[in-house]
Image 1 (cartoon, rainbow, N blue to C red):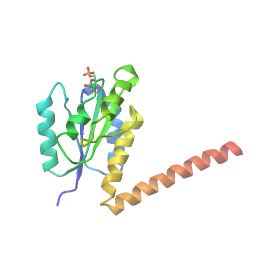
Image 2 (cartoon, rainbow, N blue to C red):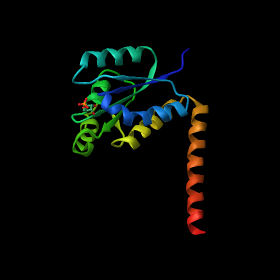
Image 3 (cartoon, protein in one colour):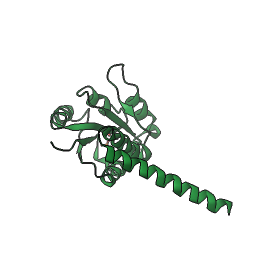
Image 4 (cartoon, rainbow, N blue to C red):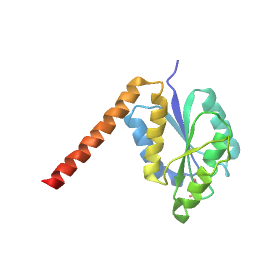
Length: 163
Ligand code: RP5
């Protein structure tokens, strides 16, 4: 059986520099992923066909990043019952338009929205990893190890401040 993968869609290549942060976290954890530039508005048929195909090929989690009237994550969620994580991009209005467009989904078609921008892009990858870890104990252990390392790094900085 092939390893479950994460499918990432972005509304524009202008989202790519921020979404590289998401790719980096997934690579660090050795999680396979596919990334596509496809838009809910500009290429709706391509978006739908990709989501259906990825779903059938074993995609476990979808990540959708978009800015402005950010309907991409919602359009993905309308096409699959796999978990969908939305990443609002700051393309206008400080990203608040994208945040609201991503998070304000009608009941029954959920999108798990993360923060605007790079922190959200990273957290989308961590959240996808945590979802995959529900069926992958080794991945779960690596997520816990990273949290312990982060806590140790903060404790070290605090100790240096107190010295
Ligand atoms: C959205 O519109 C994209 O996700 C992007 O964040 C924003 C602007 O797109 P471009 O005009 O830069 O292609 O669909």
